[in-house]
Length: 128
Length: 128
Image 1 (cartoon, helix red, strand yellow):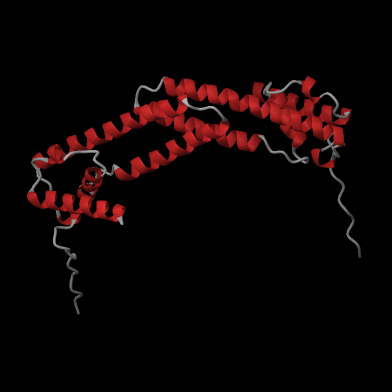
Image 2: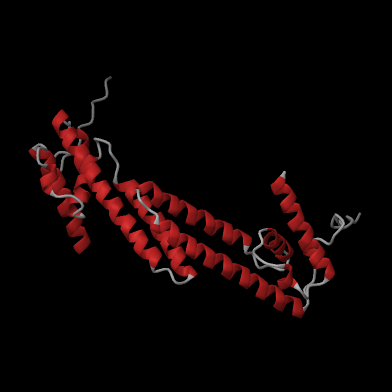
């Protein structure tokens, strides 16, 4: 007896793992991803300099150490360049205003819908 | 049949756990310990500012994060204020020139001998 293959569950929009990425979309994705990561790292570099500059006592030193460790984990977690995760990554980056929709121009409409939906979901969750 | 109690093994000098600390030795120990820790933390604060100031690229940022995490662990490990550990702590600090023998003046001769022996042992181990 053959086991029927399971259909993916859809909630009104395509799930990330169903998506295929055209060659041109991959180029756009890579550029947008790298640009957002570069901006975030540059922002953090500037922040680290400012925090270090304000160190007055040992607890400030450990605050910096903890802050950098936490931010490193967050960045490692956010910037996951796997095609099965990319719409989630862009949804989050859009919500965090770390990239603009402009940078995603050229993606298929279903990808943009998924990305916008996730950004909206995160915004609503944050407001709740 | 009673089990004979085990004698501590001595290598020519008193073991740390055998030592008792007089009231005046405790005062000296606390002052020397706090002074060395304060100096080490101030040195690290200065270093962190200088390293942060030189950050040019993301890898420099993670180098700072790793350096601070490592130094925090080392400092937590070194500065262990338990009387059973204090001669080891002072032996290490003496070896690392983080405190001077002058600051330990007032300790009993057996404590000073133990502390100097450990500092010498660490120096020899480092040179090997």
